[in-house]
Image (cartoon, rainbow, N blue to C red; front, side, top):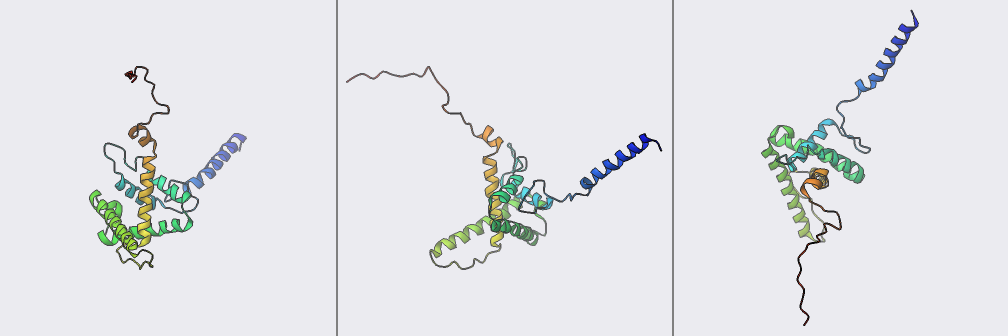
Length: 199
């Protein structure tokens, strides 16, 4: 065997070895790198569908176009306490179960109107729970008996809050929706004025 063939075969082996980890990687992982949470591609899609229902694409980009679901995940992973992150994961599971129980479908299989109705139902129950808690004043709050778990409501609240936060801080919103002029603003040298008469 000549030297050229050996080097060629060695290059093929090294190249193949380098590709093996890429081929064996779990394709079901989330697209965003998270330190504290383990999110699958299916869970990421669910968050994307919820965010898109909150801010749908119209004549302006929707939440998915602006990758707000990745922003939501990054914010929860970086800025929330461990117990909130755990409630987020648990709530996500409860959310998927509630959709399956009510509609016998997954959230992505629902039409836009049904998705919106489901989310509004969660919000309505969350507001009713807050109202009951406010009525109790300083007394201990009894457990609220609703359709949805507190983790589910917390999960949805976090997704909605961070979706809106991401949208209002996005490059698109800041450059196309909000018209902002740098301080000190424009200089208008031809501004009309009237002299006041001395009294």
